[in-house]
Image (cartoon, rainbow, N blue to C red; front, top):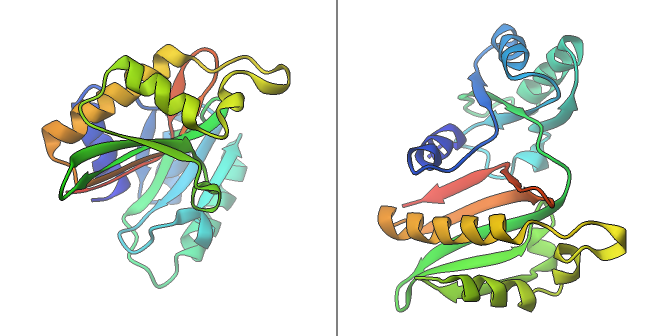
Length: 207
């Protein structure tokens, strides 16, 4: 499944996403950004590229048409030789703590959810907590408390705590979604949380 297909599946199940459009040309990308409203991010959409940042396939904080045109060309050039479905134009996410909300279907235990420190360093820090579905609110509270990085969620160094209600609602919703769609593996990464709520920036599923 492509990123656009993953987003469409999330929307079908009532997940709120940042405004986005798929562009297949530089002109379409500029038009999409104007409709969405700057600042925006660009992301390569290709079935042959798993980690977009590793190949220069992501550009963020683009604030005008000229910068967008340059970023679009750079992204397309970075994917030379790969099959490209287009470039996703997406509203920039809020600033906050980046988490991964993921899950997988274990052959023995069934679906399980994973919460951890997210972003591009998720595989380096491996700061995660897991629970078998179905989940209730207290499960989510325990998952948060088990993270080494949980002080970041509590508002370390003068920052406001993340919105725990939004975090709990999203994890429970993702758990129900995984079971209903019988998803084998899911990564919502990153999901950016602040004291007001959250933004799902990227998603990946396999069935």
